[in-house]
Amino acid sequence: MTEEKILTALDEFFTVNRAEMIADTAALVSINSVRSAPAEGRPFGDGCAKALDAAGEILKKHGFCTQNHNYYFLTAESCPEAGEAALGILAH
Image (spheres, rainbow, N blue to C red):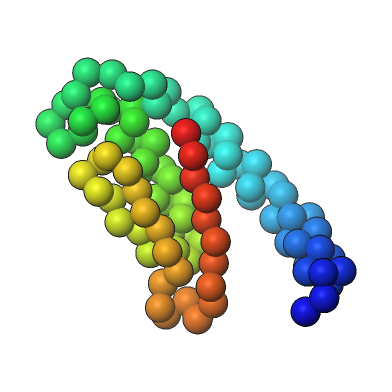
């Protein structure tokens, strides 16, 4: 695939999915994920745990398999049944 075709495909993807990407981002940034007192099974507090849960749901919606590592961090990868490679980048 040529660079031009890749850029065209990316542009089309972002155009088609813009509203959903904005909604997903808005849902994540609306969560107060500032570190707070640890709670049972949530080492960085309830808000951080809620943000990881929300991110996991968004990733699953887009075909990723996720693994929550005791609420320290979340990993995601393409699910074997998805049949396609996917890329996800999350940062706080």
